[in-house]
Structures are given as structure tokens and as C-alpha cells.
Amino acid sequence: MTQKKRFLLRLDNKLYEILEKWSADELRSVNAQIEYLLTEAARKQGRWKEDKQQKVVDEQKTETEDA
Image (cartoon, rainbow, N blue to C red; front, side):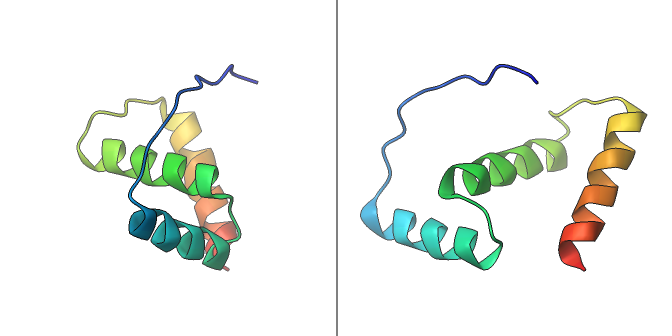
């Protein structure tokens, strides 16, 4: 497993409450939800480069979560 970078993130209380509800709706922790949202934003902007095999695995994982 890849080592993850730790850092302090300060958020507005209202934004945190929104993230907390959103993450609960998707059965994720707030931390996992923030990481998911940032990863998706990076992909949409073309800044997240990954090999084709990893993309297939991620798409399958997303499809399973949506079902």
C-alpha cells in the first residue's frame, strides 16, 4: 500500500457539515470523501495520469459502489 501524505486542513464549519453529510450518504469517512473529490477533480482537469489497467480497476470499483 502506498504511504499517504498527512497535512492539516482548515475548513469552514458549514463546508465541513456539508462534507460530513455527503460522506455519510456515500458511506465514506470525511477524509475519504475529500480525497475522492480531489482525485475526481484532478482527473477531470487532466492532471491525474494513470495507466490503463488502474483506470479499469477504478471504473469497476465505481460501478460496484453505484449498484
